[in-house]
Length: 106
View 1 (cartoon, rainbow, N blue to C red):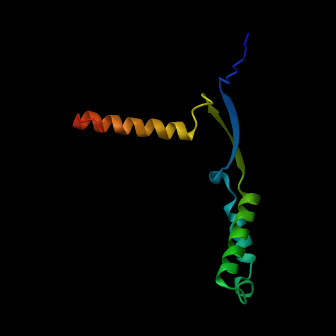
View 2: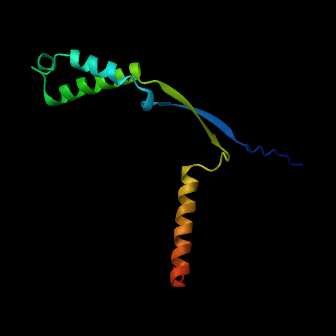
View 3: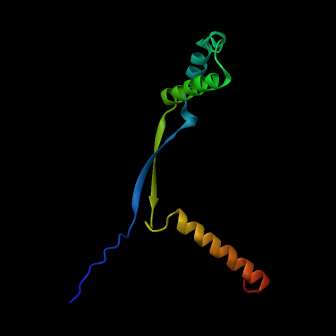
């Protein structure tokens, strides 16, 4: 006798995502820190890419320090409904609309 078990995960799950709340950022503090940096001496002997990386690092450091984060709960109802399945559904619907518009089989 052959027996097997098939276990499928159904239901939903909640994901917690942190996003920056830019509406509540302390932009005066960011502005004062950026004004305190002597940009001429910092960028004096560096190349373009190095200057960009330094500026980018400072901006993200200030965002981390002065812009609060908010928790956002994302609830996905169907575990099997991932991006690949959604793309296939959109493709199917697009083909169906084309078929209905032309009434020709492709």
